[in-house]
Length: 205
Image 1 (tube, rainbow, N blue to C red):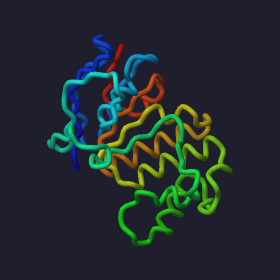
Image 2 (cartoon, rainbow, N blue to C red):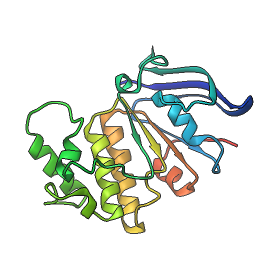
Image 3 (cartoon, one colour):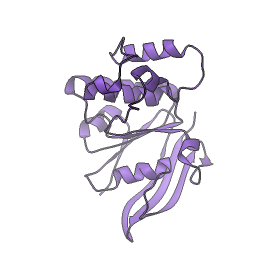
Image 4 (tube, rainbow, N blue to C red):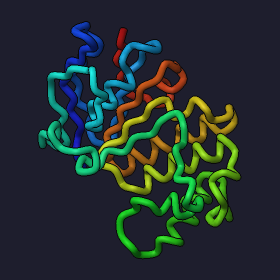
């Protein structure tokens, strides 16, 4: 189990945007709150290794004490969930879940159990285009969890879920992350997300 340490200063066109120096322990959740434009998503882009051109960053990202700042995103094995599901349109629901899943053993069984856990039993063969927005969001959440990331970044992924499902999916994500010992960095403007996360809160802006 590894912790995630982020020590960074990010600027846009010479203007300071984000300054953060925090360590998230294995199984912990750190919530970063701030209004739109405060740099929350830009912070996650830096952590995952995909900072857009035009931003200047100084600092480091460490996983388990190892400096991964110069590593490409795929080598870092950091999971990232956005507001939009971004499911692969050419793959079935089940194939979306299996994508990135380590190991070959009992993949079908793991997919079916995962779908049951998010209330979507029997949908493995469906086209993602036939899912509702809330259903697609749940599949995207589970896809990242099944890939067994070393750290998990959440970019307001609960914002498009219906109220009935939002609390349940929040609970699922945080419980799975804690059980796996995965550090979680959540960015949001929703105080209910921060309360559900139950960890420390840092404010930007």
